[in-house]
Length: 608
Ligand code: AGP
Image 1: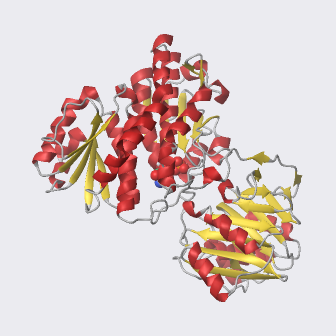
Image 2: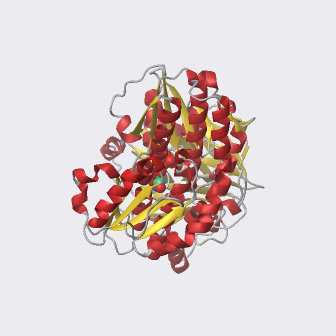
Image 3: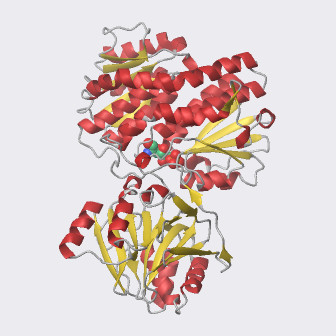
């Protein structure tokens, strides 16, 4: 999704803006631009394409020279990617960058047209905001911003410069995240902390409806109602290195390798005396005991973590768990009671549909628990309880370490809930917890052992147009994630299927050489899955099997076998995830794709 940055300080503003935007590239974008005060005038440079295109354009046509300005990477929503639709957009005296969506832009445009403002150049909702600011501007920027904010509907964040207020940047947040970085004599705005971490770790988090004024290396805040604010300065708990590739060719492979540490950092503070302890998150056995039904709602990979959670919680705690896609749940008038717990899982904590679910649940009496990676994000702040995953910044669009830590939290929760419900005694709870504690080591060992195998097997996938992932039980839940990972970065069509369901229709798709990746890590279901593997192999499929070291399977049944360490069946997803991530990664690399920034995708999906 779009990224916003801004700067006021002694450095070369254009360079700072472009460097900060580079750190937001992972969010996905199709055009970029900046606006900088040069000798008291606002100079704009913008273009369709990547930041490298913008840099080339500035080399050719001249880079705006100055010390205050705003910048933007655009992920097209209103109007195709083009030079003219790129941000910044300007009215006569106002220039803005914008993240999010203005829902009532058509009505506002009509209003402007009726009032003799017909200077629209682009198809964007953003330009309407620039023109509206201009329309109401009477020389008092704050009054003008407040007036316009009262008229806009939607979720958005804005960076604004007024031509007659040189060296000053205004910023406002309405739902879409925005932070203000505070350095030594310099200030920044950004959609996300990694954008400015190179310059400062100290930042303020803008809240709903708050306005920031950046001037003379300092910032002032006020509310939508014009009241001045003192805000708490926060410090990022990661540094530039963790937001960089650290010697790896892509963020995705770096993040795959970070998983042992991410899991350790996530679970260690939540274990006490060998038992899970989530009380710092407001989750005690007494709280958990009271819930009769659980709904896990999320999008994409986070929803897949919920699928694993369903199996584990139901098996151990015997509590019914429904998993739903946020964009469906929010429109299906769900039946919720005060005895229900709604768990929202989100890496970014800003996903529009997941956020909407949180708002919908409020008022039903049901309690909400957010499992979120980004500290201070909207979902984390608005839920009744929150468990932060400690994966550190996840930059690659394809989620890997965030999924892994979401799984680890699902297990902790399942253990604690099963204990709270009296389904397992403390001895069993400690045994399970200890196994989870040992997982980071097993993940490391698995990566070390199979990375080359997966690299090799991936060469067999690159020519495929379409493939199937199959599995049963937890392996099925897991295969959904394997399939999503592969398709989103390799662009090979892939579907995940419950292995036993194949013969009810889908098996007709099998043709000679079609890859079928079977996840067969559940010993209790192994024989059944093996039969399904034989069925597809007999019909010409290229069978790739992910199973444990001891699984009784040979090359008569599979073309390629990826063996992973054997641990207890229930925890296998945390290990079996690794080959699926590596297969997706190396297939994408071998196809020459842009691994970290797959086409059409954005890291944080802040629009519906
Ligand atoms: C994962 O690889 C995805 N690109 C995507 O499915 C993601 O998991 C989804 O958009 C949800 O994001 P969130 O966790 O930030 O809410």
